[in-house]
Amino acid sequence: MNKILTFLSIVLLSITTYSQILDPVDWSTSVEKVGDGEYDLIIQATIDAKWHLYSQNVPEDGPIPTTFIFEKSDDFELVGKTSEEEGHTVNDPVFNMKIKYFENKAVFKQRIKILKENITEVAGEVEYMACDDKQCLAPTFEDLNFSIGNLNSKAIAFINVDE
Image (cartoon, rainbow, N blue to C red; front, side, top):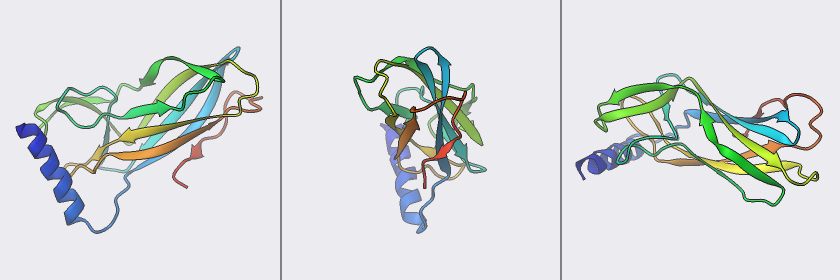
């Protein structure tokens, strides 16, 4: 209970103290063909200096984990879970636990298998929380779009989803 109150205090303080909207994480997407009918959906987070983004796997009573949700479709199926890079694991003084997070950049990948040839895009969403050494921002949602159609090359250029 004490951890939850500490977390809520930090979030409320950060919301009321700063009049400008902070957006320390930019998201971009790309698609890479990895085999016959299989693709990796690549999600890259570019994180501002002094900020960090939490892992998908954080302990209970910790911060909000980064979570990916992909729209269900009969056109494709997810293969396994969304993977992430190594990141940093530290003993976080705010939550008083070991927590994995990312600084500067994080890359996540979700493999899919195409079930119908007419698929042109995959849509999804990421929920995440960013913190610096003074504050944590409220959990944020960002739409993710992946272009699958006409993949003649190995990869499509990253698409900035904040624009």
